[in-house]
Length: 416
Image (cartoon, rainbow, N blue to C red):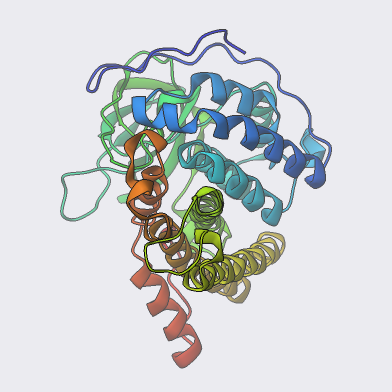
């Protein structure tokens, strides 16, 4: 673990590179992964306020996170990893997110890239990149593009001898700042049609530029800045088919959304725990409440119970959705993937509302004292408000209603 945190780059300046990877711990199974996540979460929570307020990028924490072996938990057993269930992965992400929402989100695209690799990569590609993960290397992402009303991707990949060249610009590249590899959505013209690939681009390749220009008021440490590719060389074996992953039923979409639901649930849990601590430690209730302690106020007790019930319901739906995702991963067909997508959409609808409710109630029940900036309690609301906007919750309710009312299977993409 580095002795000192690296300073955060100034906005719109190139990002510093991560230290060389080192082999992380090898976790044995699901229980080992959850235990490790809980231990790390306790350590990550201690300086979460200071990191958020100073926008101190979590280099040291990320090294500890990677060293723990948690970034390798979806590597299958026959490739040297523990191959944990989707439910365990979601619980790990939620546990870390409760301590620090940014740290919980940073590996989301790492696990997403591994799922794309599992579905569309060759055995040789899977083994190569699994070995890189087991050696301590992290994946980021460069998927989204901005400035085009047609939503078409314009980042190109073109043949170059026995390899490829990549050119284009990306934004909202969560995790790229901290990554050793940047999985990148690219398009090519083949046989008169446009084909989409996921290209795994080494962070240090010539022509790769990462700019730390993420300026969100929440999830401030995710490193979700911009990435540009200027004639970047990639090897042919680093390129995985992507569009085919959605032309046929696969688990990629619901798997990705499951992790987003886990992030929201974790932020809600963190807000709820902070509420309990803050309300218990208040010396008195509000004037006229007729009780000495806020924790004895019947109205406060009722509101705390309401948040608890909603969070428990969200947890139950998340676990149910994870089981459906595992079914779809094991036997993907039109029905199993649709059922997984709907189950995850139901979970995301509730994790969205529960995390926002929990972070709002932290202020409402804490009163004006909860707004004091030095306490950093506002970070839960800012993180929940920011991350729940990743894709609109109204899409979830529409897809769920259309499925149950009209038997309409949801569209296959990564934003449902």
